[in-house]
Image 1 (cartoon, one colour):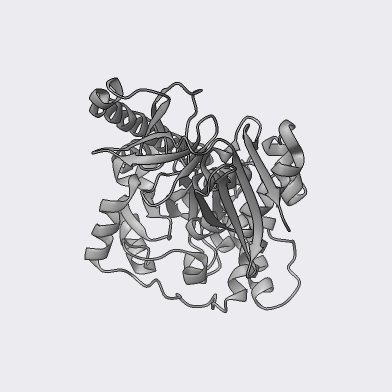
Image 2 (cartoon, helix red, strand yellow):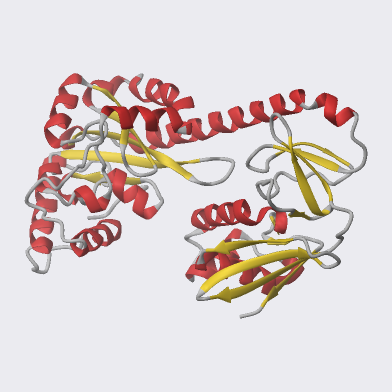
Length: 399
């Protein structure tokens, strides 16, 4: 069962014959017998996860559909609402759109938007593949949406690679969408249809739609920073000394008297923040965004990474001042900080950090997403290009 370029099916494959071969593999594995050939590693990992939560492959497991009101609330609050029309237009404009449906979920795997062939939509209704339904692996077994969420990577599945027998007549191609500012997972784009209509170009099509969505989200971000600069022009013009103007997530809209940086820790009114190049700063809330200026009582940034009651905690302060803040970290983020501290000023590339954390170079996308989430928690204490502890910061790892 040789695969090609991430596809579930190699070019030129007889789809009907291949579907029957996959069914024999599925039945053997689910029955506890050795399969005639091994399933793809991606599929085997997913089946093992799903069997571990006790789902039954012979029936439709619970979809747990949400109410219409909750679906509408999730739509309103999802950043993907900004780009969903462009996603659907791109995917439904191709010639084969009469043979599939386009689905967009949130990060919980809840279907928020669905569009496409009326005939395929009716078949999806019978399957429970409807707006408001949750399509994670622990709800409905191995499927492209849930498996893409679990693997944090694009996924294509064909026929009996799905866990539930009711999904065997389908193919599905899904790709996660990430916030280009933070790396946070926003949801999944999925194209699904009858298995025997699978087209080899669908992987490239879904990938292009994902890239378009993330590029558009970045453009909206840049436009919001421009609006922030315009709204604060009168304050910047009358404020002396080094400063940063940032949005609620810490993205820099304007800087003066300090080297350009893309982002700092998200400001909060109840704590100082550490900014390399400025020291400890006291954020000041504006009508839109924050004004960040140095707290002249402090000059040096010192971070202590320690374990408190079994949890990793980072405590940051200025050496000459009692002002400080602390953040609880995941074990993975604490490990990344320790690796970066050990690397010194040389830092680590995404590839080297992938090898340090996972033992290979194959997890660079995961590494970039994890560092992005880490920087959301600790701000500019972690620098990029390469990843390293920022200049002017001393990190002490106490455990």
